[in-house]
Length: 96
Image (cartoon, rainbow, N blue to C red; front, side, top):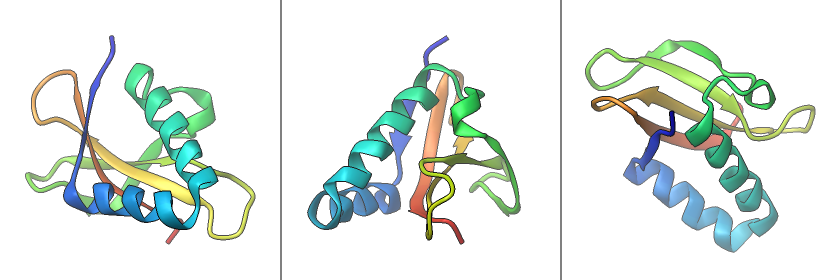
């Protein structure tokens, strides 16, 4: 199953900022979004629930790795929905 990726305004702004400040990192974000779209449980994503956050309607928030073993490694925070076969990306940000 392939998911439709929906970006929040926060995620869009983060990607726009990366386009200016770090295009190579934006390329990694696009690759990660592609993996997320086809298989949110892909081993390279190291997807896991992020316990301290919830979506706007109480959805479980998940964290997927854009980078690993690098200072301030980027992550994508997302949840399933709204509706079937959709994933909403809440944030694209360095690891908190």
